[in-house]
Image (cartoon, rainbow over all chains, first blue to last red; front, side, top):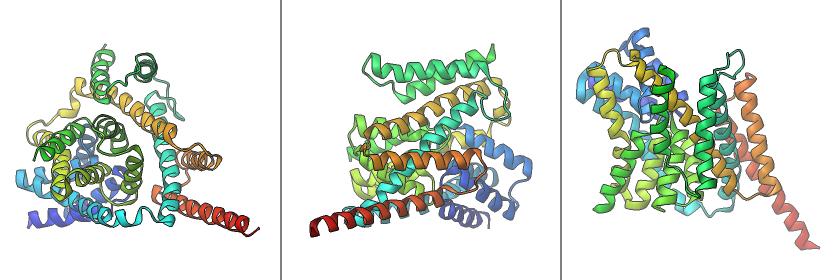
Amino acid sequence: MIYLNLFIGFMEVGLLSFGGAYAAIPLIKEVVMAYGWMDDEMLAYMIAISESTPGPIMVNMPTYVGSEKAGMLGALIATAAVVLPAFIIILLIMVVLNKFIQNRFVKAALGGLKACIIGIILVTGLSMMIKNCGLAFNDRPDIISLGLTCVFSLVYFGSRIIVKKRMHPILLICLSAFAGIVVYSL
Amino acid sequence: MFILFELFITFAKIGMFTFGGGYAMISLIENTCVENKKWITHDEMMTITVIAESTPGPIAINCATYVGYKRGKLLGAIAATIGMVVPSFFIIFFISRIFDHFLENIYVVNALKGIKIAVGILIVDAAIKMIQKMKKTALQIGMVSLAVISMILIKYFAFNISSMVLLMVFAIIGLSVFAIENRIYGEDTKE
C-alpha cells in the first residue's frame, strides 16, 4: 500500500539523516529507488526542484515524491513522516535539557560543540560565496556574480554600520532575486 | 491562543524565505526570534543550532519545534512546526501537479542564481554574529580556529569526515579542556 510505504520510507529518512539536507539526499535516493517510485531522471529533477524552492530541502523532497505518487494525501503523509522524528526528538530533549543544561559536563561539551558549529557555518558560507563567484578550484571566474556579491555584501553589512540598522534578511533575498532576474537576463 | 497564531505566522514567514538549507535560516531566526520578538536568547540560539546539527532531521524543523515549545509548550511546538512546513508544502505540491517545466524558465533560473548570492551572505552573517557574541578568550579563539581549519581541510582537501564526527571530536575537546582546567584549579587550591 502506497500510503504506508511512503510513511515508513520517509520516516526512516527523518530518523537517519544526521547533519542536514545534504546528508539526507543519498538516503532519500535510496528509499525512492528501493520502492521504485522514480527513475533517475525524475529523481534528479525532484532534487533540483526541492533545492530551488523555499523551505527545508529535506521536507520538500518527500512532499514532491508523495504528491507525484499519491496526490495530496500522499504529500501530507510523506511530509508528516519526515518531520515527526525530528519533532519528537526535540520535544524529548527539551524535557530533559532543562535538567542537564546546568550540569558542568554538559556545559563543557556544549562549549566545544559551539566552537565547532561556528567553524562549520563560517566555512560553509564562505565556500558558497566563493563558488557563486566561480572562484573555486577549476572554475572560471564569474564577473557578474562577483559584482553582485560585492554590492550586496556592502549594502547588507554596510547598512549596519552607516544607518545603525540591520537590513532585514527577507529584504535581501527579495532584492537579490530581483537583481538576478535583471542582471543575468541582460 | 494568540501566541499560537503568532508562532504559526512567524514560522510560515521564515519557511517562505528559507532557501538553500538550514544555515541560511539561522540569520532569519536570529533576526525574528532573538532580536525582534526576544523569544529566545542568542546563547539559546547557539545551543539549538548545536542540538539541531547533532540530531537527525531538518535543522529548520528542530529550530521551529524548540522555539514553539518554549513559547507555547506542546501546542506551540505543533503550531511553529506546521507553520514552517506549510508554505513549501503548497509550493511543491503545485509545482509537482501543475508546472512541468518550472526549472526551464529563464527568469526562475536567474532569480535563483541571485538568491544564491544572498544565501551565501546570510550564512556568513550568521557566523559573524556568533563570533561577535562569543567570549573572546584565547581558548575559545583557538577552538574556533581549529574548527575552521578542519572544515577547510574537509571541504577542499578531500578529507572525508562527516560533520557528525567533527562535532563529536569537539565535544570531547570541550570536555578535556574542562577536565584539565579543573585539575589546575584543584592543584592551586591545595597550595
